[in-house]
Length: 459
Image (tube, rainbow, N blue to C red; front, top):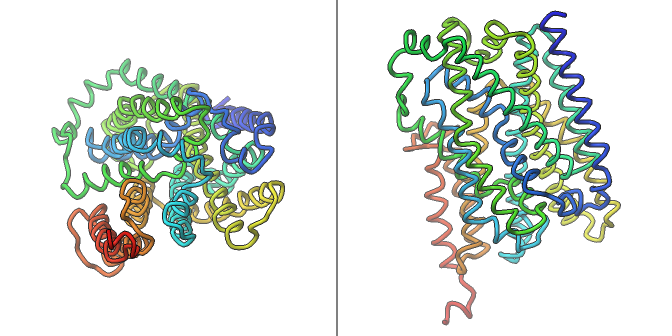
């Protein structure tokens, strides 16, 4: 059996296992609320595994190896930012949000500001960002199929369909359970690959071949460092997937510890894919950084190890896509359909709408993925748009009592205006990936103070 046949066999068995889990979890998605919250059955292992799975996806694995091949050890910063985002979420928001007992983050904003428009703005921004994140993950799967000379479109579509089926069948419970399994597969395979690299004298080869800049923690301009670190970190405060996991926990203690320990496990892990990428470029200096991980797996490691790791990469795609998919589906059903078209919809009808939405959103995501090329740049752009448009209005609404609906809307418009000026109008901004948050905050404070209720203004 050649390497390609072995990879196909492993992937078919793996994807079949994911479908079986989804079928088993149907009993935890009997109502729309259970579909979004796993019927409050989330244990520490399930939720912590899902936190890790969301970021251990191809942003950290394939993207980390790519950045390791380009920058060396400095390629860790995207992964570090992702992990620190979970730390922020755990300490700042996890317990407070768990006590809210709301279904979506838009529900929290609607309740806080007393206006549906704020929740709608958040739902739209979050849906667009989440679809970009999902597409960014599928790009890596598409690249994998292309590398082996297979039909990239059919391969990516097949993986997406599996995710859509088990997510539709079992909702958030299926996401948590499959993520936990997928993370175990990814960790196991990465450690094996890293061990093989060490046994082949990888560290010595890297010291001999790679330039000294590959061992600098920040080998690039400060703007690049900020782009890699801060958008993904700040996104942790407004991550819809994190919110959904948080609300799926069986208790408040689990909600906090799942996010915190997910970050603590991720932090040391992010180094491994980066070093594998460094080893790959040391072995094959002419290889493209974007496919360096696939190249080194096939050329430098035993076939079974390569097949297992490639299956793990598919797991990485799936573990990120499914969690984002559930939130976008839930947000569309609850914050758009129910809020604007059918306020009295029954649980049965909402559940049916959610299933249809899952399929339609999946088609859109697949279309985006097939037309895009890069991974981390796409993820960073999604985080930048999301942070600029919603970070201030969400976090500010929770912690600042004087915040108003007008201030929230002004902050969102201002943040997005600055992103558009930079990305599409050629206006140069310092640390452009996070700068729009500053004018968004200023607009939030000024407009909120100018639009205080009369009773509050008199006091």
